[in-house]
Image 1 (cartoon, one colour):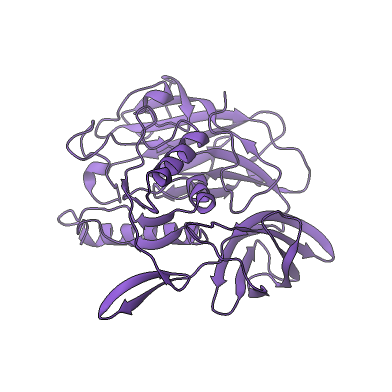
Image 2: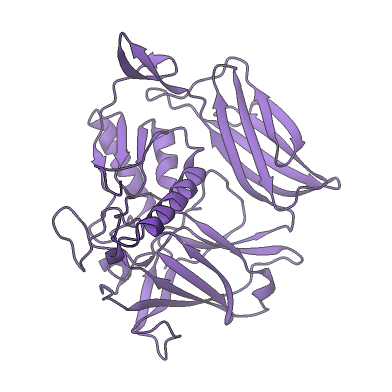
Length: 399
């Protein structure tokens, strides 16, 4: 059983990966120590509070959540093995075969550990420890309830893994991140490719039309630098015409291609200009009146996690069919595929940054965690043409 089997990072796709969603072992304990026994099975990536997980338990104050699964190393020799987590709420520590691989704090963006040196032949095991204290107010929680159940306008909390987990074999010299920036005024696209190695590594970028069979622009240069792809008469992305170009990106070391990823982009310009004395929002030089719902992003059985990729797409199509041209994603961040669907369907996104509180005596810490996670969220999703605003505070929460 592999729920949500689709490749989870559509804006930087590789051909080879292994989805680790499915039944893992779990334990809820009173201490942070490795559990003496497992409580049963949990369906990843659904949190234990969600019915879809098969657990349906809410962690009480001072409790810890532990996960365990096994995997076989991906095929290939001499490469690297990356372990990706779409999102874990909130404080995650990961061990491979009993050796700690790393730690990540933050409930809304993906993180990756290079586990190459920890993987052995045959069966390997992953153990994950998750701590989550939404009651403290010191971490961005969005609309998760302080209590152990939905109350008022807050919803049942989410603990632990709530997005896809996957393995990916890569070359030692591989692409790590992309920055894609449309420049409509100058009819060009600017791209920066970050790689695991910069010395002696070059990048080639092909910009393809929507059909994927016509090269619209080509650029090459060194990794880590902004490259410019001039586009003759660029086809602009809009609500009525959500045109997307495809990107094929390769990197080369010593004359040998070591990695290739596929991506996409939308050429669009968003700005604020005055009409008379009133500031108005313009898309591609034309004033646009935006109307959309406050989208909470909660699911009856999965809480933070949708039952399927089709369900994510269905909601977006339904909103557009009702006449909306915008969605405000309310103090929650969705998996990357949700934003891909918004890009493809042509609906604008106002992206809230999940709100914290400011608990007395911990204000500086809460501000720091909010700031750090907000930066990570923006860096993770800034390439999506559908996102046109970042909403810093909801109703003054955290100010």
